Amino acid sequence: MTQAQPNTPKMHWVVSMNYRTRSISWAVVFVAMALHLAAQAYSSWTMACMAAQFLVYPHVVYLAAKHSKDPLATEIKTMVLDALGFGVWVAVLEFPLWITFSLWICGVMGLSAFRGVRGALLASAAMVVGSLGVMAWSGLRFSPQTDVLVTLICMASLALYLFLFSLDANRRALVLRAIRHKLMKSETALQQQLHEVQSLQGLLTQQVNCDPLTGLYNRRYLTETMGRELARCMREGQPLSLLMIDIDHFKTVNDTYGHQAGDEVLKQLGAILVQEVRGSDLVCRYGGEEFLVLFPNMPLASAQARAEQYRQKVEAAVLGFGEFQISTRLSIGVAGFPGHATTPEGLIQAADRALYEAKRQGRNRVVMGTP
Image (cartoon, rainbow, N blue to C red):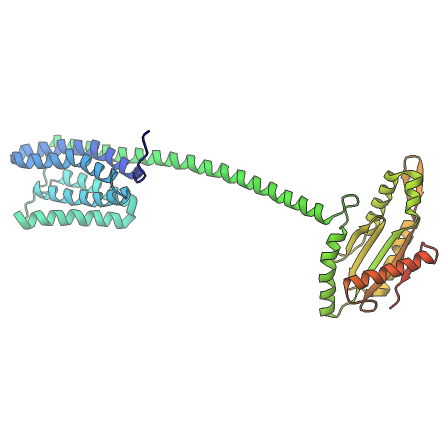
């Protein structure tokens, strides 16, 4: 079984792009330079060196980048070396105008595409260094003229280089667009999943904190909230009032009309209790037919008046259930901080004792707790 090489570097797209561009466009440049050399009667040694530079060199540096630990870094260094070699050859050829211009464009565009203005300056500087090296050896010789055929081939090589460069840029743009589209689809899917998770979290929170029948808060939520509200009222020196509400003779409703009718009565009472409450008030189903209403920052007298309003509304309401007309009554106990207790448990017990007293006195009434 063949094992994959664990340290094989991944080929960078820049290396592949430059290899294709060098192999094709440099071959055309070589033709122009070879014709110019032949016309100027240069030695065969110079021709061989130029062939090595423009025909063999692209394949050698490609293999070097392909097998290096950092292909992109190696390719960037190679592009600097390209510009240095260009500077050497334009000086050797005595700076023919079209050949010099073509090689300068090739050197500058390659580095500026990946290093910006700094890359363009680096490529230009490398060409200058290469040219200065030749001039230091053999002196400055300047012969800018090229014949028509060499000029046309230089123009063709330059056009070919720019075409290949833009073609690769277009391929990269298409790849990036496809990646961007894929990322957008993934982001949309993630946003949808996040929305679903948030909805499920909200639903779960509602199921944990709310009574499924009436939609009011449940006893668990009351226990968590009442302590905080009482502590805040203590700090701010504000009163806190509590109503303990019980439906009179609720068992009789269930026994006479059925449990579905009893559920409708509980729902109706819940709807009445949440009417006209403030944002800070808390209405919850405490258990069975018992409800509890918490009024932060409300004195006992106001809470007692609110309890009486509840009692009267329920007494006046008639629930139509099938062919039956069901009427109910409420007994309500009222307690508050600081008059009756200073703890949540103490307030609930005080309101419960007041509710018991309302029941004892004949039901359908509001009774204030005893300090």
